[in-house]
Image (tube, rainbow, N blue to C red; front, side):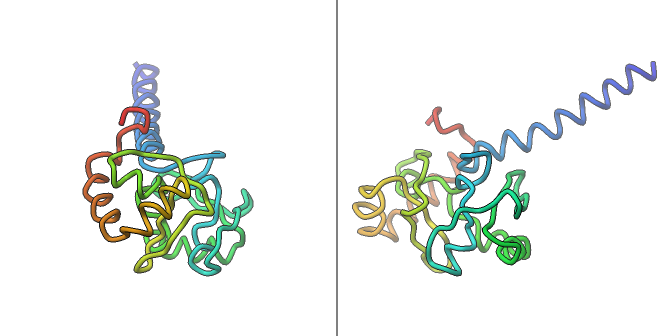
Length: 155
């Protein structure tokens, strides 16, 4: 009976740990095993440019690994992750405005009112996001409530 109880406990623990990770993978754009493809989201704010993070400087937020170019950036993120985490889990802002999850490019970004927005292509960034920033953000916010936990290929 102790074995059965231990098995149930282990199974329950495994399922409770797996569910948040599956949820996080749906909500966040992951590439190279990390959020935003391992790019340092703090650097966008402090340097106004993308910087590749390092596996040496990481933080876990919402069940996902975030990488940073320095310990200082990691510590800034850890103190206020919501301030630095990108909109729409790092998925394309223009895509979110259309109800889709589209992988992003680290060089196509904008910071609007302190929020980082990433995009997938020059057409999405320059042709949609920069031409109608407020509209893209409004539609993205509305759609994100519906799509955030849905797998990208199911949209």
